Image 1 (cartoon, one colour):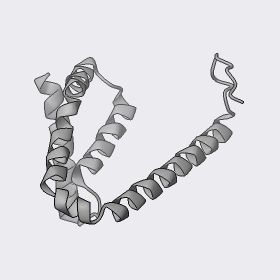
Image 2 (cartoon, helix red, strand yellow):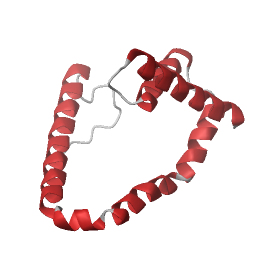
Image 3 (cartoon, one colour):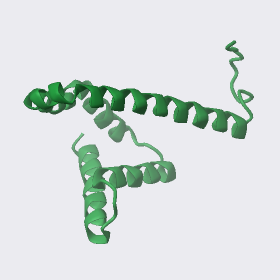
Amino acid sequence: MLRGMTVLLVCQLIGEATVRALNVPAPGPVLGMALLFAVLLWRGAPDWLDQVGQGLLRFLPLFFVPAGVGVLNHIQLMRAEWLAIAVALLVSTIITMIVTAGALMLFLRLTGGRKASGHATECH
């Protein structure tokens, strides 16, 4: 487990260092995750990394605690700006759904639909 955590943290460190050194307009952890993804595509996913991922997923709800505390700390601001927040949430949700559906349709068109799948379930 220590080996897997070390790999994850080293990828994050490389991402952070790259962002700061090259002044890249992206979060360091995202760049580190892209690096990890590239390495996994190249070398495959070892079992010890899967164990760390499963361990982190067990505690996933704890990662939302800071966001909840932040909301509670700014409750007055949220009361004052509730309409703008609601509109932003609604619009961003709609845009996300449209982009996701478009990406899926493009992916299905590029891969030939469901030919590769053994399951021929159809949605009408």
